[in-house]
Image (tube, rainbow, N blue to C red; front, side):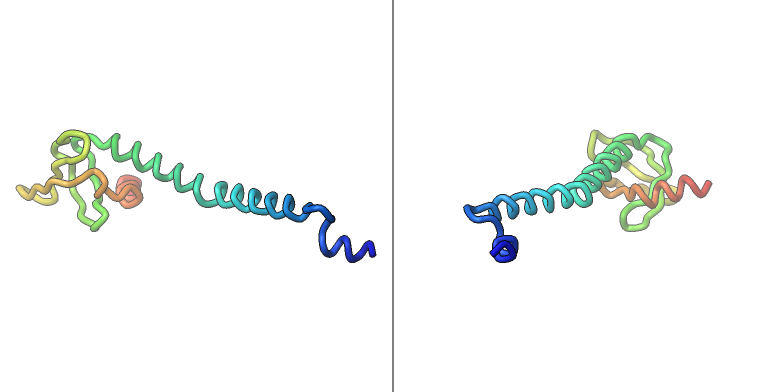
Length: 106
């Protein structure tokens, strides 16, 4: 009798509370290991892109290396990729990881 009660859960819906606790625990683990690190990474990338200034060397997501000539508003910038070759880029096109590696290699 005791073994049957332990295997089936407590009478009166005690198993429902355990299921809710397990779902809550899974959500907390998911938040700590998936959502929170992604939010932190996004925040760091946003700060990096907003901190780009004239004269900085950057690498785009497509792998193009260049130097920032002008900042045009909050979303675009003018980049020189070769002598007298200029392109207008969105700030979101800057590869944060590749740019950091480029600047650390100096």
